[in-house]
Image (cartoon, rainbow, N blue to C red; front, top):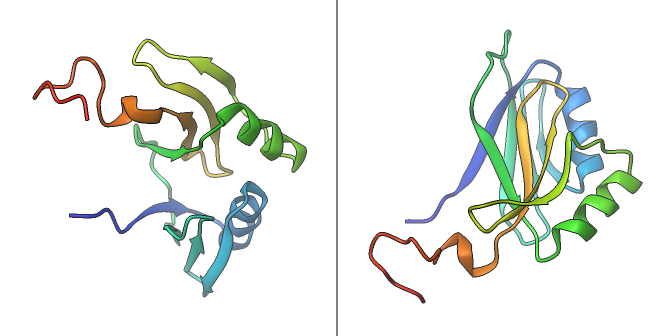
Length: 126
């Protein structure tokens, strides 16, 4: 199984497109109710119009080899983060931000700990 893409709800397609392009994504599909972006590694991310975007506990994670550099680059393009890169107890380094509709986003640097944390249930280390 492979995750195909993540789609988040937005209230204003042009505003959301501008934000995600500013974040560094490349727009590949667009209509009045939907847009899809390509990420630098070829994965896709999309947005669709919802009349009323409900508050959500969902967080979308974008992984980087160097999260500090990714945050600096995004800030240079005008992106504001709610939390700067911080080492977490689960062995990831994370920075948080929200899109204009309040969708929660995380830039992270997890390295091999994403798949093989010391507390992995099956004990695998690679």
